Image (cartoon, rainbow, N blue to C red; front, side, top):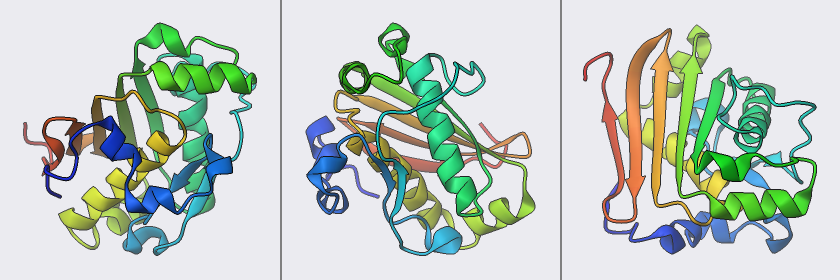
Amino acid sequence: MGGSRWHNAAALMSLTPLRRLAPRLVLALALLGVGAGLAGCEQVQVISSAPVAAGYDAKKGNNPLAAADAASLQEALRVRSQVWTIRIDTTPAAAGSIDVKNATAVRAARGKMTALVMTLTANAQATIEGFSSRGSQDEQLYAESLIQAIAQAGYTGLHDIHVEVYFNGSHHATLAWTATTGFTYKVLDGKP
């Protein structure tokens, strides 16, 4: 996907697919255009309100908010038979050290994040085959849809985004986005 259409975080937030979401879902993560090989071109609601995690799981993220958003996204994908383990790390990490049951604090913290790294790990063969079945372009679209959903949830200050995809412990691909370069996707298949 071209870098010219992604000039800044505002451009990330104003994508046509994002405009289709109702304004009342500002805190909603939605998977937009989820890879046709995995779930068709349907919209999946991920978080309809502030996350309600019972406790902070450091395996899911580097702060309570990132971990709660990763857990919610992972569960929404699992419901669609897409079995990913998801971790989200945000910068500044301290901004996400909030009470994730407080919608006002969640909204404010998401807006303070400037960088985000999402790690997707698949160990289920069906997930791996579904993700890769239509080639690297659809893999990129799928990863972009996850980032678009996060941006729509209120991560409006992002300037640097990475999605790292792992299959059975091997680094399969990386998606990067900056305000300067736009999205770039590289299939690694274990190569640097």
